[in-house]
Length: 273
Image (tube, rainbow, N blue to C red; front, side, top):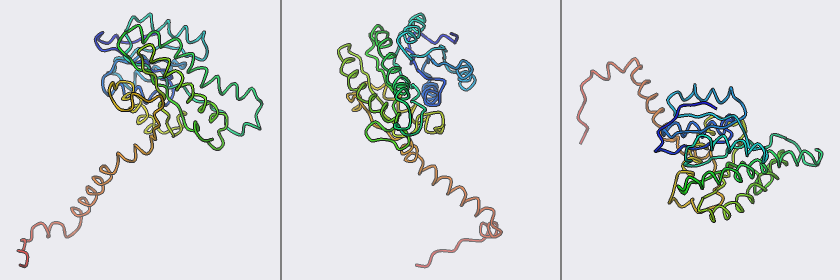
């Protein structure tokens, strides 16, 4: 555990899975708004890489995960030992990596897929929601989920089953968290959330997850599951940039044209009435 202590008046955001692409996107979004960060993950080198990527960020690193109750207990204890009130928790836990048909794999493969996603999320929520409640700030807990929760994702049967189960878990935990005066939601991203996802998609997902976790009165705050398409959002944000680039290229072509200087020096003619 290491890091720079941030000012106590701004509660940090705890990011699980910060050593993987989706979590790195959340870290980048939080660093971009100068939010203190507690980044947790299993890969110490990847976590240290976050410090190099965001040297100005108030960043605390914790090596750990929530794969089961025992690991989640140790993770929660490490977070509690920081004695820092949490502003929000974003669980960017990696989805199952197994590909192929369910019928072609042993039943244990499905159990492993559920352990990687469903059980890890359930254990994390079970042990971290009390820490969020202890802060008494009405904090939010956001889980990240991937495609396949409502219809099977071709070639990823195990991941689709786990995603569907995670969606129901979010509905259940959303209701249970309300009794603690907390908000728990699932950001269901209909794009790939594994380490093969583009960094652009990860940044868009990270920004959306962070805005959802920190919002208080937005219309999405009442929903257990918020569906989101990261790639569509990235495309929707780019037309003005594409137009600006096209205009700049057109200007450069005009300036580099052999007739550009003569056209610029020739007197302008009044338009014909």
